[in-house]
Image (cartoon, rainbow over the protein chains, first blue to last red):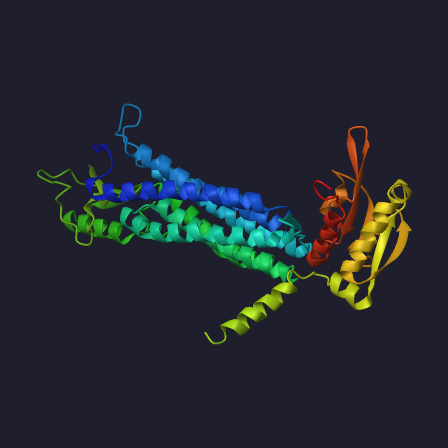
Length: 302
Length: 149
């Protein structure tokens, strides 16, 4: 049972920074959704980018909800606390990321197959007829900057916090700025008379987004079915989990060592031995595990 | 830096032709000095004859071309527009016309009411001919009475 109330002291400052960053993320995302909504007109490519920006809100909101739950102590209904809310948010974010990639690919393929020619008209402002494509280009350029900056700032925090939900949000931000660049090139290409430019750029980018989404889905489902703790950006066992297993096998030869991950924490179980007297899981030496907070508990079972 | 003015001039020159038409409609009209117009047969022909003539004059002046008009039913004319056999169709459209998705229906040059519904006499262009569409839109706006006039 988790006896912790709130996050471990070692990660509180980083968690506070991540929560602040995600509030900024939500604020900037809403401003992008408004700007794109005003500029999109009848352009299907802009509408797609707008829907993707809406989906981009899912990971930061999931993170903020998960962070709030994680702080709660265990209670009569939830004996193991709320560490796994982060894992649940991670699954939701992974689904949203994969959905963005699939949505983008579908739209690009349909536009290419039907040879869709997009019309962008003009608006009269102060006596001048301005092509609405200029407003779309400005909105797309604006839409690339916040996700580029925020995603870049999220990565080191996600690494220190072992937060796969935050890492997935960084991937979503990468998807958003890449989609913004594709949209910018698409509108600019359309202005050159290249109807296919937008769709080709979007199709290429969608493949990398889908790959990231599928990888995140594999890790998220692995965590929910008690798979071994995974590295942040891979479905392979993390080096920290390997270090814990190695130290426990050395200390308890002949015993089975089982491990799973609950949110950002590793829980280990040693099967086949009685809990030794004077064994303190907090001070038990584990070479290779520098951030000790990562190991939530070591349990014993005969 | 010494190439900056030349680069700026080249960019400005490129912007003059920007955006371009996907199918090159305006380039074709300017080269041939003819714009192929489909006029949907019906009430609008007589009801809004003056508005149609004035509009085609403005478009013709801006494009440097004369109009070559064919008359017919809406759907065949719109199909010919989609195949690039016409540059412009003018006809009555409703606000929820299914053709809105398949062609660029421009702001109306005249409108009449049928009960609570509006019938819009609209120029219609082929999708993606964005430079041509801007010219057509400008000609609609230039025909509207100025505020306070």
